[in-house]
Each structure stands twice: as structure tokens, then as C-alpha cells.
Amino acid sequence: MPEESAPTFSAAVHIGASHASMIVIAILPDGTEEMVEFLEKNIPLGRDIFRYGHILSSTIEQAATVMLGFQECLTELQLSGIPVRAVTTNTLTEASNAEVFLNRLQISSGWRFTPLDDGEMTRLVFLKTRRRLRDTPSMQKRNTIVAHVGPGNTRLLLFKEGQIVRYQSYRLGSHRTWERLNSPDLLGEAIIRLIREQISGLVAQLHYDFREEKIEDLVMIGTEIQMLSPYLSKKDRTKSRYKILEQLTQDIAAVTEPERVKLYNLDYQTAGSILPALVINATIAETFGLTSLRVPGSDYEKGLLTDLAHPYALQDELIRQMIHSAEFTARRYLVDMKHARHVAHLATRLFHETQELHQLDAHDALLLEIAALLHEVGNHISPKDHELHSLYIVRYSEIFGLNDFDRLIVALITRYHRKDSPRASHPYYCDLVSENRIRVAKLSAILRIADALERTHSQRVKDLRFHVKGTKAYLTLEGLLDATAERLALPGKADLFEDLYGLNLVLTES
Image (cartoon, rainbow, N blue to C red):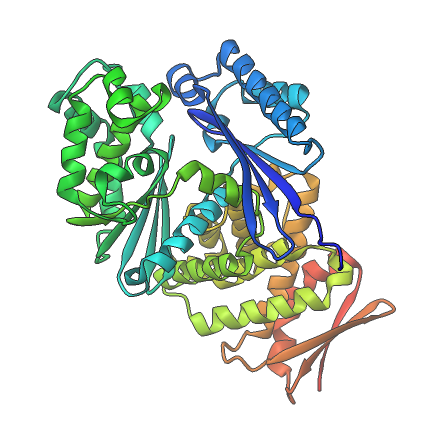
């Protein structure tokens, strides 16, 4: 009989606001997975960051000790050499000594920890939400808000017909709110009222942002709310009601933190942050006038770690949602979508045709496509110098799946789709390191040419081919008999490409 293939193993480590956890997964030959081990230890990271602005030395040493314990576990399992994905909460970036903390962890454990950025967090929230789409069929039809209340931020994803159409993030988190109260000894209605006062400004902003949307359903995810799912819904069910959430909030507010630990099977790190998490979720439900809600019964941390161990899970679906979100933003600013989509198509084709020249990767291609969809949003403010308005709009818009740096790159590509080429004195561009300046220049050069080929806004150019011969680069427009309009537009747009590569761009018909 043939010998069965051995399973492969991977692990993920996450240092969150109140816990450090590790999961070890076995991937079996048939592709199925089994959890081999799960460990979780308390670390008061969120308390330090939001109370003191830095991480205490005792907490740093505690984290280093926990990591050594995780390594000992892998050694006992004879898995010390397996790949480990090591990340921290994105709130770590708010600590003044974040770099000291990361360096200490790497020296003590050998693992290189990176804070989860907004792009990765939205990917993880999306993966959790994707599971809700499977077990909650109504999300495919109803306008549904998915609210993720984290330690430092709250993220809202709006789904329509199962597609993400809006994404917003707010500095409204369970640990951030709790540590700023300075009155943890208050109980009952007094502490609830104080939390509501603390968050009122951001809740008002949230209400304003979604004022025109008809929200029909709310899915609540996050560490604290999912810990309390047994008290909010029946076993193996996700549906709950606002009245149940309101009553649970009042019950937990009425007792001290030690009593919360005993009554609700919580740890001491979560006993404080649990109350603001409940109040924030309840306030969101009130804002949208919802009486029924959904809370997944799964373990938040185990799900997070499992998703971290699969950085490319549902990557194609995630990209489709990112494109959908960019298109939604473009429509908000009344962009000619036929033109935008066709420029994106031509830019993508040109990106692949010129791969040997620019040597950029698939992520760069995605940023180029998003920039192409958004390059004319600035017209909503004024057609004059609209590339400058596009820069501002994209820079400060929430686009699902893009972290802050990606959004900056996209904003700069839209800024250089016409008129000026990048200059070292330009705002934002001047702050980039040389490698990223070149990335922006290369991608902008492609977008400028694609935009020139769609000068007539009539989608005349269906496809193209590109080849280099000597000092000339030939761009052949397939199926177009007369490229006079495109040829007239090209000189003002091809300059950046020609300067970058030292080639003379020649347009030909076929």
C-alpha cells in the first residue's frame, strides 16, 4: 500500500490588547485542517497604551516570557521549525516605545512581529464576515452593517446584496474608551451614562456618515461581544434582540469587575473593557433603529489566529470586494464609470504588457487599477486642476482593503494622471523613500497613457500590444483603424513613460 503523506503544520501568534495567543494547525493531505494546540495568556497591552501612552517594562518582560512559553510548547510538540506568523494589535503603533517592544520580542523569541495594519485588519474582518454570509442567508438580500468593535477602533462594513459597498473606521474602541474614563469604580446607570458621553461625538459622526443608508440588519463581532454570545442568543444561534443586549449591559454595569469575572466567566483583562464594548454595540444598534441583531457564537481569537495562518485565503474574493469599494467611492463623486472602468482595463493591460520594463508585482497592479477607477473623482470639486482634488479625496477616503500607505500610493497615482510629472518638492511625494517614488512614477506613467487612449470617453480602444525595438516602444491598438484622437492626446501623457525608460513611444493601428 502507498505510504500516506504526512500533514504539514503552521502556527500563528497574536499579541492583542489583553491577551497573547497561539494556534498550531495541521493541514492534512486531503486539504482539511485540524487544530493541534491553542494557548492564551493575559498581557495588559491595551491598558498600558491607552492609560500611559507607552508599554511598561513589566509588560514587555511579561510578553517576552509568554513568547518563550509558546516556543517551549512547539518544542514539546516537536514542531519548533514550522513557519510562524507573528503579529500584534494595530493599537501598538500608538505606544511611544512600540519599537522597543517589537525589538525585545524579536530578540527573545526570534520571531519578527509586525503590527496589523488597517489593510490586514479589514481582510481579517472580511474573512469573518464571509463566514456570516454563509450562515446568514439574509445578508445576501438585506442592507447589513457588520460592526467590529476592537480595542482601539470600530470598523463598520456595509453590505448590500452580499457585496461590500462602504467601509468606515472610527477611533472608538473598548480599551480606548475604558482607559479614558478615569472612573472605573462607578456602577450602574452612572457608568453607562459616562461611557455614552465619552463616545457621543464619534457616534454622531457615524450616524452622519450612514444617514442616507437604510440599514436592515446588524452583525456584531469582536473579542468582548463574542465572549458574551451565550448570554445574547440561544445555543447554535446567532440572532438576538436589542432588548437582550440592553439588559445584559445594565446587568454587567451593576456589578464590580471581580464579580464580572465570576458571573460571566471572564478574565480580569476583559472585565473592564467588556462594558464599553457592550455600550458601543448597543449605541450602534440604536443609531440605526434596529431591534434585532446577530452575534456569532464562535471564539473570536481562535478564528482570528486561524485566518492569520492563511494570509492568502479568499484573496480573489477580497480583491473583488476592494474593486467594488473603489467603484462605490467613484460613483459617490459622480465619476463617468464607463470611462473609469475602461481606463482601468487599458491600464491593467498595459501593466502586463510592460512587465519586463517596470518589474512591479500583482499588488502594484491592483493599486493601479484602483487609481484608474478613482482618477477623476476630483472633477466633483472642480474640473480645473482636478488631479489635485483627486489626490485629496482619495487620500482621505476609506477604501475597503487599503491600508493608509496603500491609499497614499493610490492618491499620488491619481494626482499624476495628468499635467505635472512627480517632483521631489511635491507634498506627500517628497516624504516617500526612493523606492516608493519610483513605484509611483512607474504606475502614474501607465495611467497617463491609458487615460490618453481613452481621451474620447467612447471606449474605442478595445485591446493593445506593446513591444520594444531599439530606442522605440511600439504601442499597437488592436481593432482601431484610425487612432488620430489618441495620437493627438499621447504626447502630453507619454512624457513620464519616455523619461523613465529612455524610449520613444510610437502609436500604431492594426
